[in-house]
Image (cartoon, rainbow over all chains, first blue to last red; front, side, top):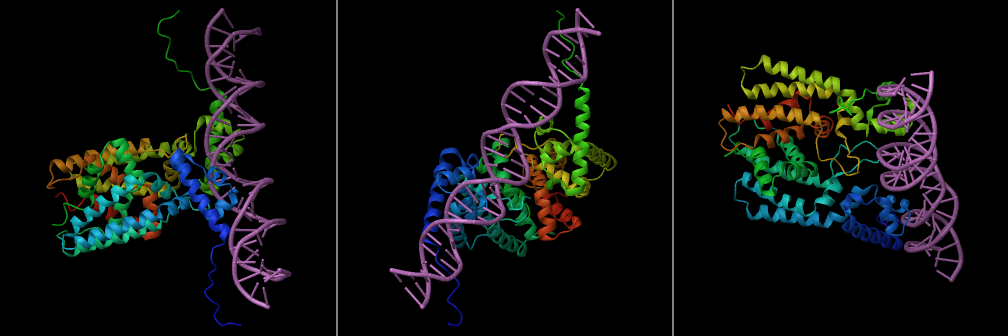
Length: 206
Length: 206
DNA sequence: TATATAAGCGGAGAATTCTCCGCATGTCAA
DNA sequence: TTGACATGCGGAGAATTCTCCGCTTATATA
């Protein structure tokens, strides 16, 4: 017997890999044709010529499927953000935060449907999820760092905790909030950026 | 033919009124026993000894039912708020805003489940509602007035629009955000109040 | 190649939301 | 009292989400 079995990894079975590709392709087709929230998991399974069980084993809900579809683009987004932060290292944190917001809002606009799909996660038990997804946490970490930097050199008397403020800003950036501002209040993307900046960044430091 | 028929109102039929009471009672019983989000519309209909169709004709979804159940308490809430604002008319708006927040948070805590139920509205067609409910709009109006007052006597350079800021604050007060802060971040109600105050009110005017 | 076995498949079906429409009945006018 | 008819009832059933579990099959070993 070999001690310490080789990593308990097992390559994905060939048919499984093929099915995954079928699912992804089917989802892309249907999403493009009907819009993300008009497409049901059943439809996707049927289009991919799979049983519902097969689809659900891989993705526990539509949210996870959307996340998989958008993952590559999210990686690019974070790449863009990091590049931007690198280039503007010498600028004040408030300005860098504004830049990050701008980049994110552009991304949000481009991938609105899928991002909304991602956020609609419902934990499998039936009650709405309280926990946020990986995108949320990564952005949160980034924002906290910028806020901390602002606080260090800041003029504010009693700023809110950076963690709290980052949560509030991300809540304000959620699909729901963004769509409401855009469609009901009628703000343009630029206007939303400006208002977010004034609410969550400015008039405090500097 | 009579000109201008008498108001096109027709009193609610007696059996209908009785059924409504049955629904309300059944919902209260089940909500107390199992918790709002564990109870299905079907269960409520069964408990009230009605067909699902009857229940759905009166309340298009659970959100509307919750709203009806909570309506009286909401009226009391707004009564409390107005009384508070009246009593403290001479205080600066920022302080009054804080008071309003405190009152609302107490209400939120007491009626968490039902309020969450109210917010979970889904427009009947299937896509998530973008529009907010009546409670939202009433609170929004109130907050806008306070913000406007702050802006009038304010020291801020370029405050965000009052409408926008009120939207952001209300978003931060949503069930989702509140529960996240309380259960995941571990903030007490007092701490949340303090953080909200610092984020959305203070460090700006005065 | 043969075979053990873990990985994966698929569809029946439970639970839920919500609609449709034929039938019953309360209410009003005569 | 007696219809007429608008109002309301109820349940069948469509659509959707999600689970369960027996059967199949790809893959690793011998």
